[in-house]
Length: 165
Image (cartoon, rainbow, N blue to C red):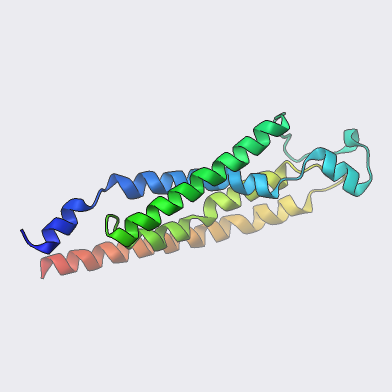
């Protein structure tokens, strides 16, 4: 058996899928947690009573420990998945193309987490940030998705071309 057969047999197709899902699933709550402002903090910073705050989207009534657990848990899952994927790519167990594809997909859950943090932020008056995020994030997401898809398709074609020759 030659070296190419041994290398191909070591590749696990489930590893990039599971690692990618974990990375993307952990990034959203981590971004939300990092960007969110607690209602008490916002009221103290802006000098208005807590009861006067308005929300574009009413936040879930989570206790502080649950907020921190979701954010830190998401960050831990994302970091562990990133380390697993980096290890898999560096050892050849995952095809190298998955690195750039996942890097292009990573901003999507980050933008979703940021959007949720902005949407549930306590404000007085209009939430201009939510309008800006809602206006800017979809075109950015389309660019990132198109880039990831292009990288994956071009890699697949290049690999198919090498196999045919």
